[in-house]
Amino acid sequence: MPDTDWLTDPPAVRCNRPFQPTKPSHRVEKIGGVLIRRGHITYCVDLLVPTALHFLFAESAVANNVWVNILRNRRAFLARNFVKPFLGFADDQLKRMTGSKGRGKKGQRPEIEEKFGYDVKAAMHTLRLLNECKELLSEGRITLPRPEREFLVRVRAGKYAMDKVVAMAEKLFAECEEAARSSSLPERVDRVAISRILTDSYRRAWDPA
Image: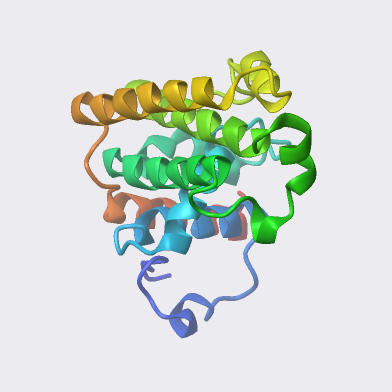
């Protein structure tokens, strides 16, 4: 079977195969596509980057050789320039919290603001994203569940004033930018390496032996 570039070949080429791929290999194709395409920055793709990375670090119920091989090579999916989508997503949440960019999805969190005085859910997501970003750039991983889970629960419960949350966020923004400058991760993901991983994933799915 000829090599296939799962990130650049047109669908007609990628789909011209004996049968449909298994879910693990399909999942990694989608992850790879998101993480590579963020190089052509669009707002929607940037918002998907943190979520896509979670697949690579969350405990998985899938234990077949396809997904195990993907996780073994997950560093190929990591890059220093992911700082931009993480910080952009966190900034979006922070602006929702402060009201400078509307509050919540179509204004659907008035009950939270009424109870706590501000959108504590947006506050929690802001700090979670920033901590994940800092760890990714510094350590090359994202720990899930989050080690600061109890702190995030307190934020979500409104235990901190909004000014305090803003101050913590500003400190973390600066720490993330510094972590990006000193990170050992490559500037961008290796398109060739990821394409090889995806191709190998499909081959493993089609021929488990």
